[in-house]
Picture 1 (spheres, rainbow, N blue to C red):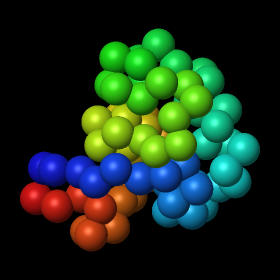
Picture 2 (cartoon, helix red, strand yellow):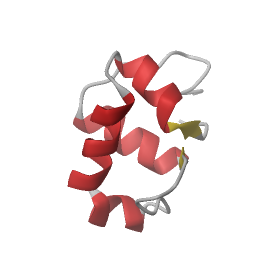
Picture 3 (tube, rainbow, N blue to C red):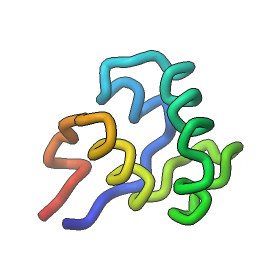
Picture 4 (cartoon, helix red, strand yellow):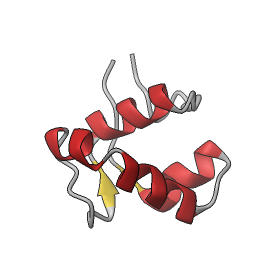
Length: 68
């Protein structure tokens, strides 16, 4: 499965949460996200970070985001 880079705002809209919530998720998981090429201040989430957060928080990504 290949993923697409998303802004934190786009990910928040897909997840149905506020941008502030996504920001908190990123802070809580900063060590793992750094390993996935997404530093804490990044505006966009690397595809591996999108996959990690969506799996951790049970976010269903639309087909246009997660292509198989």
